[in-house]
Image (cartoon, rainbow, N blue to C red; front, top):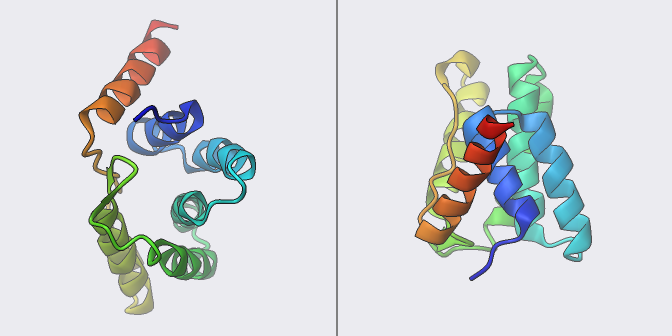
Length: 133
């Protein structure tokens, strides 16, 4: 399976740079190109929730993660589009619970585990290209 360049970029910004604003930018473009696919929208909302959490907007994080989980529930496969979907859902649920329980600072960084070797290679190449610039 060939993965869209913008999807690879999203995973690079998410996992390597942890630039959740840029994640939003690239994935929103893909979401619009791909006919507003709920999978992309859910991942987009996870990233924007992290952006809000990082900036102290916990209400915004809760709102986005709640919406993201509703969308990602439509993808019950443990692995989807080369990533550990079950892990994304579990981590998002844990972050949501931490905020609701008054423990917003207990969550460290978040990574999306890549399970497809081809996708992992594409993200690694994207990272190496960035380092070479």
